[in-house]
Image (cartoon, rainbow over all chains, first blue to last red; front, side):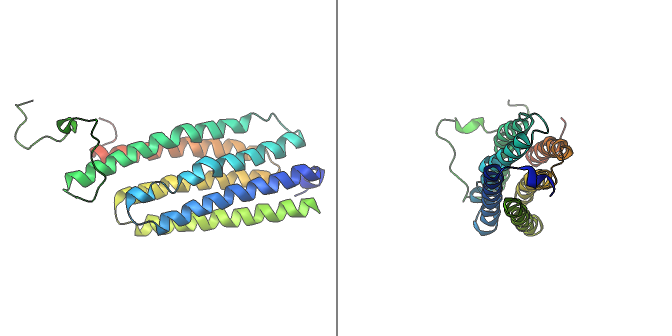
Length: 133
Length: 93
């Protein structure tokens, strides 16, 4: 921690505040994965860590390293943009797979099917009917 | 003085991230179905990346940034592969 003495007071306090904010939000999201009841409620919890948990810690890193002047600031934005872009893709794929699994097993307590989609458009084929369509 | 504040807040933040990772490890072991395990794995790689970033702030070393970027990229690819496997039963079709 020798570099911290080189930081001015406002930068050190801002970095400390942002790091604590990000870690606290991530912890709240992780506690949410323990406490929430079903999978479709639980899938909302880690997004606290991927939105502002990541954002605050990336901002803290930007403030720390740009005030220290050791390298270019904009590298950290790459992590923020990457996490922001990839998290919805992953969670959409995962929830779609979970819905497919639950409906294939005939589970009834899953979220309702969207009214915008025709009911036969779900790719569930009846066994033995492979010549029909 | 402010250096001590920064040191202690980074230490507390790392402890919080480790506790968050412990919560997700519990869900990874006890999760009732496979999608819960994939979800907690997805949260765990993000938390590991944040831990690496806080190590970078703590030590002032620029090399931790590349490690965090590699963790983010590989974690995304593996989570998508796991979700695809849950959907189809195979990854590459």
